[in-house]
Image 1: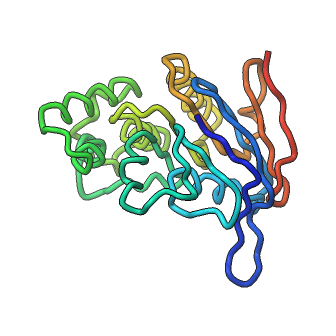
Image 2: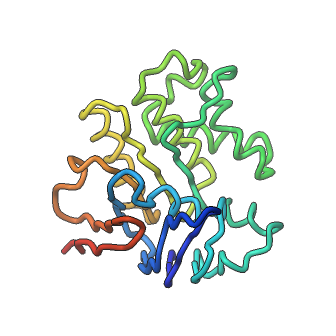
Length: 222
């Protein structure tokens, strides 16, 4: 489903964000990626949807070689991915449901089908009764739920979340993680980058760790 093989990423000026990173994630897995600030977590995440390209090495996503993917094919790759960013990237000049509808409109879904999927996604995250609200009216945890609904509205095979619980209180953070667990239970592959060690306890969680751009290993569950 996701495979990194000897992947490195260098930026102009000689800064090395990732060095010789290798790992694989199988379909239906829930994996946490941890590491100190500046360890390379966000860079790694940007490589998967081809927001950035590796300097060397091979990245396979759903059998596609991201390193060799033509720019014209990138939108089709991203349709199989759900992306949740730390800063949410919500639009505050439109309603909750309008935010969730955006990626569906870009993907060419007919309006009736898009509305059906958007409302189903909001129901999944417990916000059916807030679809007409403006995001600014919601709590931080609710805003993150909107971002998750937007990411899963097109029913992606892979869900990527970069620090999705940042700036949330412990209860809201736990609820967000529970949502990701629920998506994993219906077959979605989930990769979560986090520095919040409180989220990593308990059985059944696979953990990968980056240290200064290198994979330091992790714990396989069960």
